[in-house]
Length: 177
Image 1: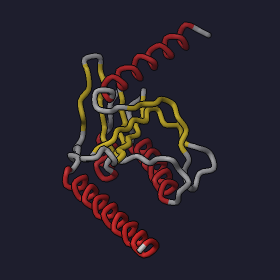
Image 2: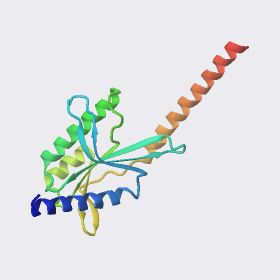
Image 3: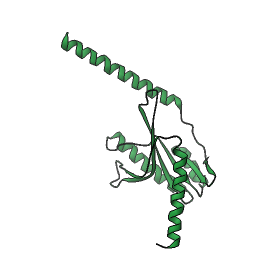
Image 4: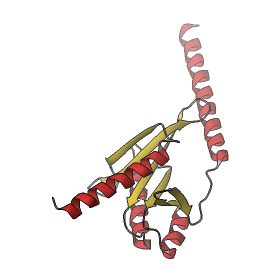
């Protein structure tokens, strides 16, 4: 392997480590370079970083993120291609093919984003992160994660659980009384 290739590999590893350090503060579980199935694509997609944690009062809501790492300036085509991959994985999860799908997606770059990419990222709800040696900054317009949707999802699970318990008690009552 040439010195240039070794240096590029070293820089890539350092970049990946920086991004992982950012997310390990907020997520309990992380894995790098995993493959995830899509519904339409025959080949699985490579996920640079997949992180997840459990939220909610009972810690029963799984929250997944997909982070794409880019060592080049991100343009609108990169955002478009990434979003199509994400949507395909989400469709696979809905169809019961995939194991997980991302609730949020991020693109992390150490070179930057062009303005068209940031506009498209806003439209597609892709969080853009500029990584440098001092840390990171979100760029573009980032929508905050709503606590209200988490609250309603938790209420939904509570209602379903309550109905299931009532149904089980009713069945037991019919069978044994």
